[in-house]
Structure formats: C-alpha cells, structure tokens
Image (cartoon, rainbow, N blue to C red; front, side, top):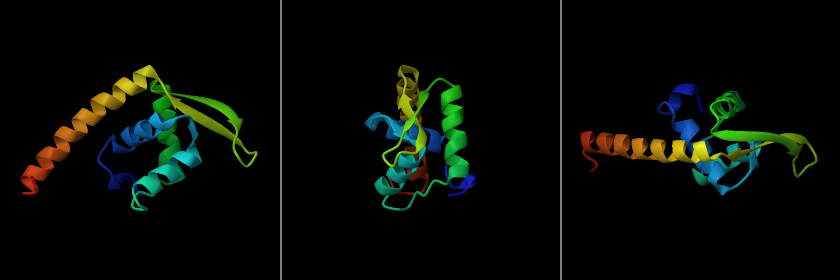
Length: 108
C-alpha cells in the first residue's frame, strides 16, 4: 500500500485499533491488518514503522523490546490511555467523514 492509498490518519487509526487486541510487534500488526481486511490492506514496512514511531512519539502507544515467537528480537507495542482517547476521537471523525462521502456518492 502506498502512502497515498489511505486517507490521512487512517493508518494510525487502524494501528491503534489493532492494538486494542493486546500487545503486538510490528510484523504481527501488519499481518492482522491484512487478515482483517481480507488481504486488501497490505501495509509495507516503509509505511508501518514510521507510523509506529510517530504514534510512540505522540504518547499514543508504548514500545518495549522483547522476543518474538520465533526467538527474534522485536519491539512490542501497546495502546496507552492517551492512545485510546485518540482512537475514540479518530473513530468519530472517520464515521463523520465516511458518512459524508457516502452521501455525496449516493450510497447513504
């Protein structure tokens, strides 16, 4: 997926939503997004890892180094309380925007 394939902020929102399922490392986040979207959303490392870094710098997720299931060193991320609030506000904004687009397109 290229940078312009999603509305601005959508990747961040989906990463935050994915982390409501628990602590995950980057590869697991990408795989879960692919699985949940039925292989439509394929987030590349070049998009995902900068998003994770941005989310962590904003205090919306916390990362900690650990061992993955295949004994590789990986950074595991979890949602913070601020991240949950950000997800709630972004979800509301997304609903409003997608509803407006649906009305314009005659789908609502």
